[in-house]
Amino acid sequence: MNTFALVIGFALLVLSLIYVSLPFRNAEPVQKSSRAALKRPGASKQALEESHQKAILALRDLDFDYRAGKVSDDDYSGLRANLLAQAATSYQRLDEMSDAKLESLIQARRKLRPAENADPQANPAPASEFRCENCQAPLVEGANFCMKCGTMVKKEFCPHCGKPVGAGDSFCPACGLSLASSPLPNKK
Image 1 (tube, rainbow, N blue to C red):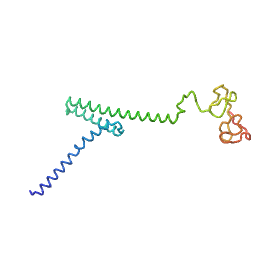
Image 2 (image 1 turned 45 degrees about the vertical axis):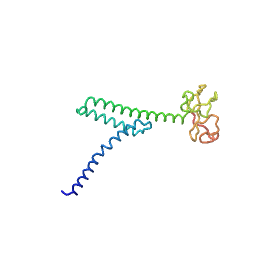
Image 3 (image 1 turned 180 degrees about the vertical axis):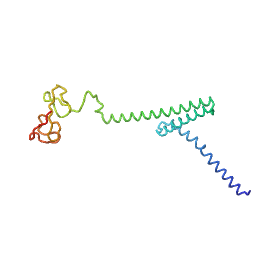
């Protein structure tokens, strides 16, 4: 055999060993990064979900190996407790993250609509510009009776747009039609 063939063979052997050992070299930093993702306070949701999924898959593999007899009882109990703790921690952090996001959405909604969060009995509906003919209390839009005195509300409607108008109105508040020139035939 000549020396050139030996050098080429040795170089191919070294390259193939490096190629085969790459997964073993990269496996440890991935596990460390997933554990570090759990310990960081600002861990992203994706990193936490990935860590949780990895822990669940590792737990499933461990259970399978234990049933197959590949893992001893002592190793199984220690590894299982560690994986369960890791899965529980990541799940708890995901839950806290979801709760925090939900709380922030609730607070944002409360800031946008403070009037809607008031006591609903205090202001059941926005008051219209119409008043009761008997007691002059503001009428709730769509009401058939006055909330203060109980008088039945006489509803008159604009012949042009169909919106309700007051008994003493000269013009329709919605479309501006002169009600004096047109009779109000639509009474309920």
